[in-house]
Image (cartoon, rainbow, N blue to C red):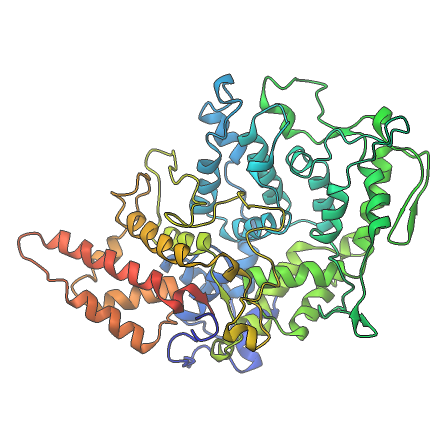
Length: 556
């Protein structure tokens, strides 16, 4: 399914001009000047599905007016909405009775993803949460307040997702949630009496997952080899050396204790008596003895940040999250070059400029060229969360009670099989290089990362969950969608399916799929006694059939 769903008829509209360089004028401009080349409805919707949570008619018009680059600039300049932390506080979740529960976390996470107008910021925050992984389930031995710790971690990612990646590494490394999840909170120096060594967990994952990866990479993401074998980027000695740096870090309880969640909002504090003050070495570099724990951390992160693997390792994963699971080597190289230098700033800030990297990914010809929708290897499987959010965003789903009772949707058999910040391991819900075995995808030497979450149970569970969500009166959630625009089209199956095809699938449904869905909708009679109910039945059916179609599930 993932390699065959090309979408639509493969026709490029006359206003899209996808095959000519001029068509991508908006992809190279960094100004807010509207593009001189008209952007079709379908092209704008497709862009919004890569860059945000989904498409609405109003947002399509914005993209057409501002151009791709201008829309990105507008989104990046948009102020952040209420933080997850502050929402929890506003609901009284800091009362002592909630100290040892996760109550409120799912609600504040879904509220942001569904309701925030800064959809680009939320999309990048979500992508980063799947690279710099923390799971609320793993926040143990932290004095409680898991909901606040997890909310603060997402708030941190959101606040820094348009900043510099070096700063982000610094902030996650001194974050209470990360310190609990990867077990270095309270990590102490070598004890010669007991033989106890510093915990190596975070040192390992910081290199393996958050920065440079396991093997040396060329700038286009390809693996460096020696005598036919990949060259490892680090070894056990490097982990041991870096682990010494992550000693002496613990909660900052200088102005409060754990009877309130406030300590989770402050960075970790360095306790010198627990810090390993001797020299440390890793990645061929030395951290001298006798310097403070804060300085040792700074120098260590500088070493990691300077590693040549960082740009291709992170750039490729971000491309996979936003655009396509199998980007060309040239695409990765172009984004890596921007990651290494944004072309504007000087010094440290020239590297790791997330605004520049995000623009490079979304405005690249490989992302914007509509001819690529015809390539079997191009595109990505939408994660279950992203499928759900596409519906919620396109039809302005809201929670009248402001309680956002979507809940934990991790159960694959009855819900989405995925839920925000509830990854089953530090390796995320899926591996970026996952290849589904015994498939045409494997035979073509392609990867399909999100298919690691696909099973017989998850396919059925997703459809059943969406059926309940779409209706709004089933399933126990409190979301209400706005179908007023669809009600005007319910008498006309072709118009109804066409509108949903645009908003959810960027008009990528094949003619056969469109005709099948139209026939199904037309078979639902429009009764004179309860015409409004019949219209809603048609809307619900059309939405569900599009949401279940392979051309929607595979984002081209």
